[in-house]
Length: 318
Image: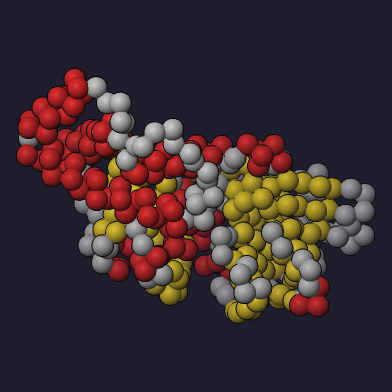
């Protein structure tokens, strides 16, 4: 089911409903506030329907947030017996703030950071060129003997300046990618690390298991499963694989969770999936990943789900 443009009146009503959910979660809510809420409900039958729908969707969001590895580790100890939805929204606010700031520790580490609306390109001191995808960050560690880039978050494309005496290595989690005179792309995802080679070759090594070293040639993509610690190498169209540089993504039987991870790079808020069953649904095709509404329209039509906006939150649900 495709997303339809929401009227300004309904957008205002959605914001008011979300605001009332937060207020009603306050155990110390004043009687005057409760009276204003009652008046708001009675102003228009649509207010009541929107509020009830918002409560259901916030329940979905809470479950999705709890199952999201990026949010589930947030330790919140509420000082009151507020409704669970208030805690969920607090978790979302904290997570969204961290998302915008790339987390304090990450910002301190990074030498180059891209926001949600940026895909910057920079020439490094050795003449190599790096371009970051949105919501990505790197740190640079160059010495006279080596050139090391730490991909702290997200995705980056590298065009490496030739200097055989100074190896050029990109480290993304447990994966080290050493250039063999090349151009290549590294995506450091939640579940896997992908390396796509568009020129020459790279050598992959893995922390604690150098015996599994893999050479990846031009026109190949290596995917390292972070949980299984296994690598799969396949042929790939470099132009398609680097579609993110044009604000596009082309997928073949990819999970919805993968698509949403890519969408969140470009979205100034948070997109969550209401259940693990939905997260595992498969999507194929090409979409404008940098255009959130267009990507949502494609997804909702392709797999028959709905997408509902509540302020900075978008919930994908049945």
